[in-house]
Picture 1: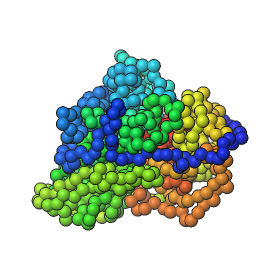
Picture 2: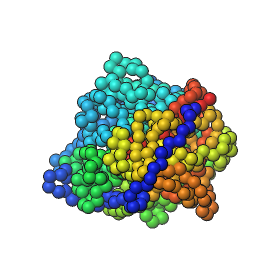
Picture 3: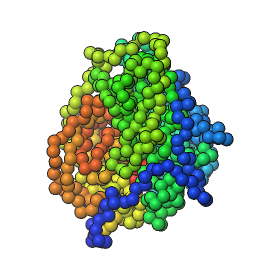
Picture 4: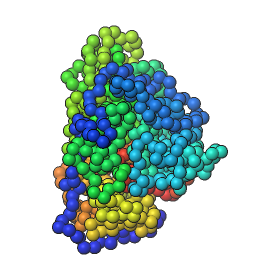
Length: 620
Ligand SMILES: [Cu+2]
C-alpha cells in the first residue's frame, strides 16, 4: 500500500464565511424559450405514446466471441418534428443509438473486441467537450472505453476510465497494449462468474463519460443462470420474452432541428432557464455542468413510447440511464400492481409489492407488472422524483413526469408464467441474508462538494464534487498525479496517496459513506456486489466543507433498507446528511491476480466526470 500522508495544508480561512454549495444558484428546468442568436431548444411537449417501444430482447447477441464497433450513426427518436427524420448519434455494434443486448450465461466467458470507429478529433464530438477538467486528453481522436457495469470483471477488462483508446491508436495509461493493426480496439474477457442479473455496458472514458453516454453509448448485458433462464420453462416461473422487456429511461434536450443538445455555458443555460447561471464569469466554454437535466424522456431510444400489452403479468427490467435525474416511477390508480423482484445484481428472495420504484442513475429495478385488471385501458408509467430529490428541479407532469404508456388489449395470448411466484430463491439458489458478517473493521469514507478557487489543471471556481475519507477529507481522483486544487484557504494535493481503499481479496468490509453534501449521490463500486446495512443521520465538525470529519454524532436510529432495496446491489443512494453503510465482499474473478485496480465513484455522470471518483485496489 502507498504511504498515507497528510493531505491538507490548512491555511487561514479567507473571506467573510464559507460558501456553502447549497447557496449556489442551481438551474431549474423550465419550458425552453429559444432566443435570437442561440441554438433553439425544443419546446415540449412532443407527441407522446405514438411510437412502439423497441424490444431490446428481440435479437440479442448470444455468442462468446463478439466484435463490437463503436461508431457514429443517425437515429429516429420519434420526435415528430416537421422536416426532421433522424438525429446524429453514436451506437454500439451498428445500432443507431444504444447497442445490442448481450445475453451471457453465468459461468461461460465471453470475449469482446471493442473497436473505436469514431473518426476525427475531439472537436468532431457530437457534443461540446470541456477539455479543462481532468480528462483523457488524447492528442488526437475521440477516447472511448467500455465498462461492464455490474460485471465481476478482470481489472484489465473492466473498462477503467484511464483505459481508453482512440481511433488513431492513442491509449490511456491503463489500457491494454494494442492488439490489432491500427490499435483502435480493446479486447476484453468477461468471465461471467456471477448470478443472473440485469447489468449493462456503457462508456467510461475519463472526464468525457457523460457526453459519450449521452451520444448513445449504453446498452444492456443480461446474465442468465440455471434459475433465471429466460426460457418459458424456467423453474422460477418468471415471464419470458415477449412478456419480458428491458427498459432504459433517459432524459434529453433536443434542438428544433432534432439534434442532441447538452448545455455548456451560461448562455446555453439561459436558453432553458433565464437568470439561472451556474458558472463563474471566467468559466471556459464549453464547461462541465454541476448536473444535467433534460426536458424530454427517451425510453429505449424513443421519446415517450407506447407498448401494446396483453392483460397479464409482465417482467419489466428497468435501468436509469440518465446523467443526473433520479426517477420515482409509479402508475396512477390501482389497476396496475407492481412487484419488485430484483435489484442491481440479481433477484430478491421473494417478490415485494410496491406502489412506486425509486432508481438513481446507474441503478436497476427488476419488476413484475400485472396489467390483468387494466384490460382495455391505457395506463401510463409516471415519474415524480424532483431531480436528485434535494434539488429545486420541478417535475413537469406533462413531460418529465411522463415515462411511457402501456396500451392494454382485451385478450391474453399466452397464459404461461402468468402468476407472481411465491419465491425467487428456490432451495438450490442461495438466499440473500442481510448482512454478511464483516471480517474487517469499518472503512470510513465521505462525499464532499465545494468551490475550488483554482486548480492545476484549472477548475475556474466551479462547484466540484469529491470523494475522500473521514480521516483525510477530500482527495483528488488519482491523487498521486501532479495536480493540486486550492479551495478557500485549503490546498489539497495527491501527495502520493494514489488510493486509500485497499481491501484484501476475499475480505468482507463495511463501508460507511458519510455524505457531507446537499445532494443525493448514487455511489457505485466496480467489481463487487454488496448489501445495504442501514442509513443514519449524523452531524460532524469540519474546518471547511472538504476537511476531515471529527466529532461525528449520530442522530436517531439507523434505518435498514426497505424490503425492495434489501437485495444485491452495486450502486447505492447516499442521502445528504446521512451515513450509508454497506457490506461488501471483495471477491475477484478466479483468473484475477492481486493487486487488482478498480474504481468507486458517484454515478451522476456529471459528477464522476468532474472528480467524484477514486481508485481502489484489491490487495493480496
Ligand atoms: Cu454525485
